[in-house]
View 1 (cartoon, one colour):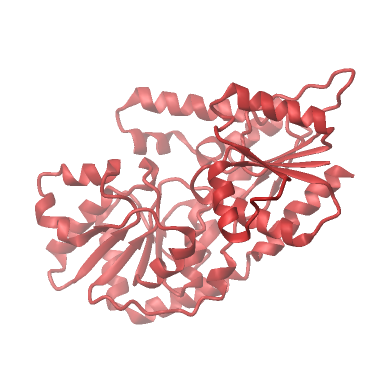
View 2 (cartoon, one colour):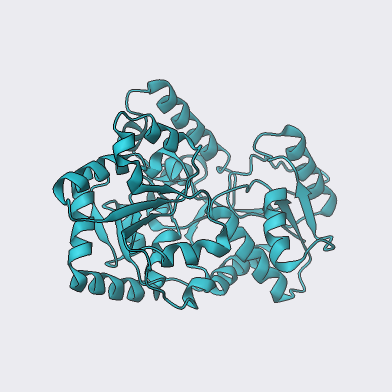
Length: 387
């Protein structure tokens, strides 16, 4: 019997991957017996698409096992009771400790992991985000190391990029804690809705720069105010707007509004709030350029979504972004506001460059599996562990 564990997923791109995995699993009509542990958020997301309200293979967790000891015990008790042979956590850590005893043999443990801070960050990344806030820096580093500890007894670890697989944290797990452990890469991909998308041109009069992101410090959103100042001073003719998927009351928005010159530059920014999954294609289609200048990522699907939508993409000149984007992006130093601004001006003025980047972006998509192909990669590993 197989248990699919998504009980710890509540937000972000992980929800999209989980919903896609579950959708394909249910369509497979597999003869294998399985249960799916889900958060309430994920259940609602999937139920909206598939109507799984009466499917008793779903077990809902109101609280994340990451923060709730009773929920962790509930999972472990269910694993023992069900005599589960494979326990697959789509994105860990699961914060569970499995132990063999006389009456119980622990299942084959497979765990996906997509936390760039734990796998392939360096000290410079922490300094860029936390500046002189050393308490927060050390606290975050310690939390990342704790996550790695919960991976050490897994039989198989799955990453989304080679950068994550070969990073410092992954090496630490593989070579120090558990040398027999297997490490594999199954990449993220673009949703099928983007592959079938009828590409639309932006109808806005202003040159629209889209930033599809959650409000995290490493997403590097606040530098856009510096970019805006540069564009206004260096290119007075440039009619542009930043369209950002964070809310008016988010921490970064409040930081924008606290700036002394915000009244002068606020007209260049639209904070439109969280974009539901099904509306992401519309958002990207409404933009001229997609800007992804995160300081650290594992695999944001937005890179591929921009390429599938035939939009020019500006990305951080970082190894993780190069691995995902191939040659289908204009790369910039994410900490250099002038370089970011000049890249946007270049894309506004140079249609030939845009066409080249769009063509290379579309070519780049061929390197990645479809959603169903990605699911089969996971399912083969799960069923092999089951056997």
